[in-house]
Length: 453
Ligand code: UD1
Ligand code: CA
Image (tube, rainbow, N blue to C red; front, top):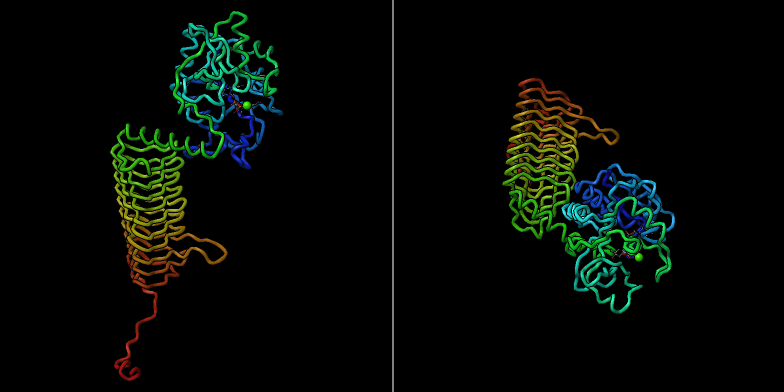
């Protein structure tokens, strides 16, 4: 017996007005389809089957984990979609059915649905909720004792049925055998001419199988995303949820409403996040760090006790007890050590900066290996590009690069090498030696009084 998820995602999502299929649109940095897949897995699902149709290849490319893909060539309804996967359904399996456009469902809710389904010994259990305005949803029709009879779509409902406020979430648990054989009896004799999955409920009840409704979710979890406005609403709900999760883990946020943290970001306790920070992708922030206002950090690791002020960091690693910014720009593959100072208007790309080194202001460090205890002065440029190719430079431990120097790559500054300010270094600098590479100063006595009025 397995717990399997079938995710329905063959629809086009016309109201998104997008070239891309609906389920690859992102909520808090993650495609809706991947939210649903990840949530199902953390609820204990063993295998995931995804039903794709519109833009199938595009969705398949964006799915970030191992799933079985089943294609539904024509979208003839939710029941027809599930029928496409019938070879994947074992008689003994418990099947979770869920839509790819409901990114806000919590794994806890799916777990509860699974448990409720088994405790009651149901063959089918529908996750439902009661709402003020049920417009558009399938209505959950029950007996006076609350026994589930059937689900009626809005377009097929009588006036009395339309007044029911308990709605079908579109999320279900089925026993594999019951799902398969009830799907054999559905037809498309309804207002939309579709094969409705929801008709299986009535079929199972009529043959004497136990079916039930489980009111185990709130509407903000069940919200389906059909338009850009709903996408932004889902984003807002998820953002609040993510931020509250971090605060519960001991992170301080000065203003969570203006703090944007994507789904997979990790943050250590006692870290403080200031307004306007954006933490994206696979970013990991250590403990007791400070992420200052308007910092944007993507796919990067920031160490404990490090402070980032008003800076942009992409695909990089920063050690602990280091300070970055304000206005620093760490481009891909900047690897900055511990106790380092990267000051204002310093740009680093594809370079290593060893422990205890400093580049306090206005420098470009590209394609360089900088050792420990190195001082990079104000205005230093690592000249890494000759217009055709890029070259690396090395600055070894304890070196001092004076202000406004150019290091024309490839060049090596040996340990404790010392470069005079304003030098353009084209040759290697030996160990503990001074290199001066600039025109000698000429002083012309009395020149001003002789030449200027
Ligand atoms: C469905 C339910 C309704 C429920 C609502 C909750 C049915 C008949 N109705 O209605 O009771 O209240 O969800 O949101 O099931 N899909 C396919 N192939 C198809 C048709 C749909 O993969 O042939 C996918 C869509 O991409 C979507 C999901 O199934 O992800 C739901 O389809 P949709 O047509 O939006 O169903 P609703 O009309 O919202
Ligand atoms: Ca529909």
